Image (cartoon, rainbow, N blue to C red; front, top):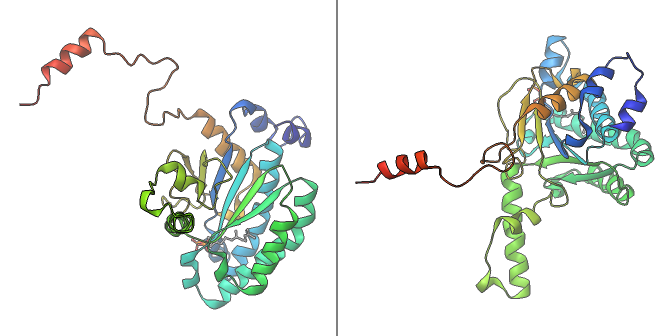
Length: 279
Ligand code: FPP
């Protein structure tokens, strides 16, 4: 949080929000479903692609703010496997915007020690996009600050299928296929996001109450935050508000809140349990 507070002046917009955030309880990993670009454009009688173009600024803001807060990882849903169903011109624009973003932002990513990773079925990307993406990922691979995962041609189900197939392949290669036992840890280590902790906070813009095939495995215990703001309008204020809301949540992971919860049954509970005898 120190770097964020240093970038703000007392009394400036977002100063109070940033002050209110507890640096000891930051989400380690934030994931964002950036939705509403098309509607943002439609409301302005602009083509949908204008909404995607306007979505670049909030990407930059989210990356910069997460880096300054000290968040460890940020995962952005940039293109789903289902997005190929969109008109060719829209898909083409998304690739151009991605290339533009990489070119524009690489110097800042380097300067701020940010590591870029791409997750998804990347083999299906147009060759030039793939090449430029790989180059940006390679160039930032030794950075040690915020990790930014761009989910591109991504599907949560496909990711789990790919993980299971890579486990089978490894077992075939090392001859352990007969005795192979798959458990949660093994699957988690074979996901695209294996190097990151699971997201603590999942933000979705534009008010839709859907997960849309995003990080299905990893968000098992993520706190969900849905805002009606359309992605091109998403600001640092929105992000700080989401983090503050996250810090109000009581994360129980299926247990009870509070340290030292007594797990032994008390006499009143014992007699209730005893009365519930299955016939
Ligand atoms: C969803 O809005 C958004 C996308 C499918 C693309 C997201 C792309 C960007 C934010 C710009 C480029 C990103 C990077 C990382 C360079 P939608 O089109 O489904 O909106 P709608 O639901 O209002 O139609």
